Image (cartoon, rainbow, N blue to C red; front, side, top):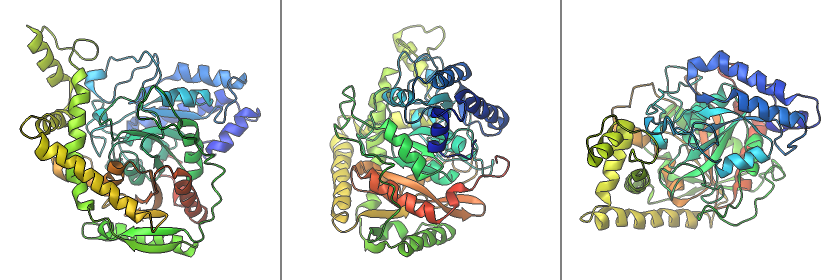
Length: 481
């Protein structure tokens, strides 16, 4: 059953050929068997899952994803379940409501198996900052799965769930998808509601999903996406039928290759894999066009001003008073605040709060934050000009395959540079995907595809065409077949 597509699983549950309860029990058994090695899930909600599955078997609901087992990144609020955000600060927090994404997927008939592990408050590129310990890469358990949605990517790669939700602030869907050899999509900013998604950087955070294939991602994203009046950044725009757009025909598609992304820093083995993947697109009828995105080199510094600034504001609500972690035996209010935050937040979260508070301070706002906002506009304008000449952009996701656990955890700058190829699209609010493209030394490499705003259908079709011609997305790590 874990080899079937999302559409096949749901169709079989809807017409009675497959029991949703049996399907749920199958994947729960896989989690019990394999996740002790990976640590990809923080919580497993067995009773809720079996109850939802029994409802599907009774025909309620009979939605597009009826019976599909799924896991949610533990950044999405789930009513009655712990929603920890990978942090000690929220270790005891039980959400009183569902996020919009959870509501939509529940209405489509999905079955929630659990909540996936993640970097604390989505701050990290390796899934090593989680309060619950690091997630391990199924292709080699000595290596990281990427972050911050590493738990979701690892769970899908190991076949513990057919699909999982994630969030992408600066690459946190695309990067772990690449490192774990699965398909991951970050839609246009505003396409998926942020209601009930615990905030890191509000102008950058965007929900998306992981699955084995572009066709599976199309089905899940179609159920997730849509306008939500409770989110002021949600865009009131019709959601296309992404599945119907998967023709597989990309004849004449103009694919831009940014010179800045294929320059110094990209490892030779990764470059070889990407060159082969891009050549496959040309064989399928696409036209390759070299383009320039001249402000790319400013993306890392821009992001690491803006994102910490927003994080310092969003995380101010965690004060030990209303909910979340509270220190023991506080002597006064100041002691309660300072110790609750110092004990409840990990090192990386504390680091970003401090950076954010600094760049927003009275003497530095214009020099850092305001300048970063202006640079962000320049980066978006680069893409706008490029899309006048091309339909899609192809690029690396990462400079290299996954690195070893512990290798960069004490070197923040090196860790931040892992996102050098994903940050520009996040700053511009563009939709992007990572598509499995090959291997280097037994570790997966992903190809990044970027589309103009709200052109997720074009993006998914291009990924689908590649996957019709290749089998990289069907490969499974040894021991998880």
